[in-house]
Amino acid sequence: MQNDSVKFKIEFKKRLYSFALKLITFIDQLPNDNVSKRIGDQLLRSGTSIIGNYIEATASSSKKDFTNFFNHSLKSANESKLWVSLLKDTGRAVKEKTEWFIVELDEISKIFASSILTLKGRK
Image 1 (spheres, one colour):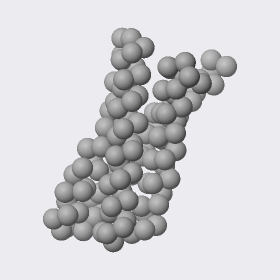
Image 2 (cartoon, rainbow, N blue to C red):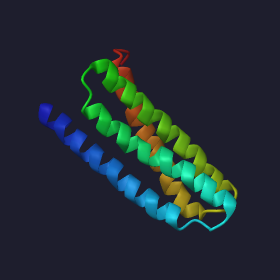
Image 3 (spheres, rainbow, N blue to C red):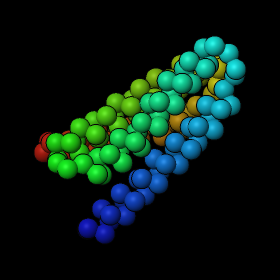
């Protein structure tokens, strides 16, 4: 059981890092208009914050801090879904590219939400 947990943590960290790399490439390919730049800036902050807070959680000194950083990652993932959806619905990004991000962010959010419930003893 312990090995599965360690393996999951390693794979999840790699998944978050890969997500951030793909997000940076996606943002770089947005149109060069004012709205795309602003939304892209917001998406870059929230999207890269997911792994940033995850890394901070792994280095936290208490369960409360750990849970708090997971909460921040969850909020950042949810915020990122908003920005990607806006880019899709305004036609500033290709629908097929945004769909992958929305699905991935939804899965990442579910993992964080489930972990938070477990940490709080509600699951």
